[in-house]
Length: 147
Length: 191
Image (cartoon, rainbow over all chains, first blue to last red; front, top):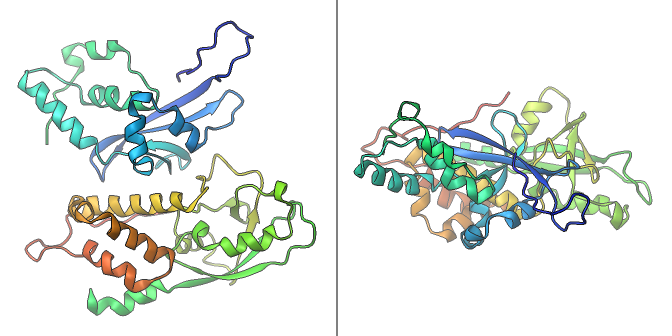
């Protein structure tokens, strides 16, 4: 859960509100890649609308989002919980992951697939992975296979 | 697939007689009559109920109307499931017509996806088609199609045009003779 609020003094009137995010990582058997599901509410429990979610996508990714918002982030049913979640579409994951993994292999770097994937897609929807994840001991990561 | 055309037509034109009743706690200016409609099994509730919405909105004040949602015997109906599936899951053992309750307030955020426009339905439908093709053809057939073909698929469904729909869908239902069928056959199981 990441607060996206940066209002200053407690009690100060702020135009920004605190949003509570919940992230789930699932695996898509159809696309054979991990998929990021998330939901977001204000502190009073009101869930964010799709428009608000699109609006909160980091500025660096807005251009890509505007090219095809309906192909990027939509509301879907969580396959296990059966509840509405927002989903970052997985169709293009393989494209960019393969490219990065090939680069790692060429440099004989050990890579943790999930860390690689999550550190790439997470920031699009407010999930910034701490650098400590990249410093995992070798025995804690596994070589990732490139298809 | 041409031998199966009769079966394809029967599936496409399957209908469920339905009676829509306004939820009793909705605030109306006069009494709301129930509305009867034959629902296509292969379509989606929010795609085929514009007339239902208009009918009930006529007896309500504008400020009382928010996003429409449907419920059967206390269970919110997931519009993103095909109508035939919803009926089979919830009401297959009950007498026809299927009785659905219409709501305009207190949208159940925890149960239902929002559906503010037809774009949402189109996005959902196309996502299902794409995922199915990922399994059948490694997404090759769907990705090689032009945007206008995708549109034709959607418009065929939206406007109940069997020939228009199947002109494109037949390509998604084919496989090269040298393969022994689809890579994987996509299907979903619901309980």
